[in-house]
Image (cartoon, rainbow, N blue to C red; front, side, top):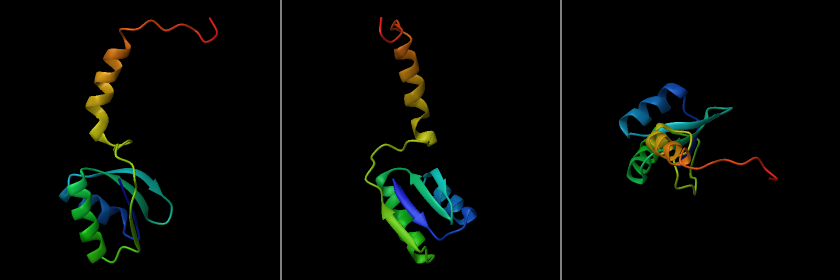
Length: 91
């Protein structure tokens, strides 16, 4: 994942579209946590730097949580969970 501060939401949306990335978290002050492939995020970071982003930091998280990249995995996980009986806690 990648942290970017100092670009507008529109600029970040365009960067994400160009580099197959997605906004995972929006923070105050034009700050964003982005998810995507390592190659895509590296290219996005280079472009954001050229656009004078105030801060760009790799976030040492290898799962692009909160993005559409996990949609398929969450559907598959839900189907696997349906195979198990759930007992109330403490029983």
